[in-house]
Length: 311
Image (cartoon, rainbow, N blue to C red; front, side):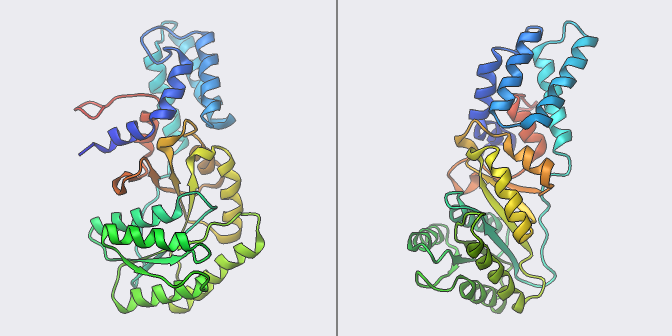
């Protein structure tokens, strides 16, 4: 079983490699100089860490270099990681249960963000933690989405509430929450249709789901998490801004970080919108959906190792 930190290291390998290849040994043993700092700046921008975070990292390294002319790249990596940890302070989502069951989690986002797969992986994770879970296939606009969630449910032995393609998504959500309550389930995870954040009619469909489930439990949905594709980089910030304004997001899941060198965008979303990050997708298997750790993320991005065999 991989350590959590090693899973972060491997899952973020493309971002780490992109930074390492451009810094040409900055985080190795030689002393840093103006050229290596310029290369680091380019790498951080390419990885979508943004102006604010990139500027803070460079300023901290420059300040340390002025005090110690022999400052090595490996020491600069530690400094960069600490800056990133400060920037992400408070960003880790803390999972809470509703006062009465079930706790309802609605997953939203654009097409292709990985919502359906994430819904199944999240349900599996809650089940592994000892919870009872029910999945709601509310992406009724795509027959493939219902089939996909059903296949995942059968593979992972999960309960599923679904209807035929074209059914009212809000009605499916209502049935699922009602079933979750009558069966005494701990969680109901609602997979919604992918939608462009600029389309008002699709946004209204989300609002309808909220209204309908609140008829069963006025406090539901208890969590509204945006699922964003990590490979979109800084473009995901605009998505988050629009969905947050229309639906009131309570959390974020960043998927596909294992397939991109642009792993810094989640920092920008947190810094601008203060939406906590609950999980990150670091691979294709159910166990690759990991609870977000700011410390593991920051150390992994800058290629740092951990004592005790967790490198």
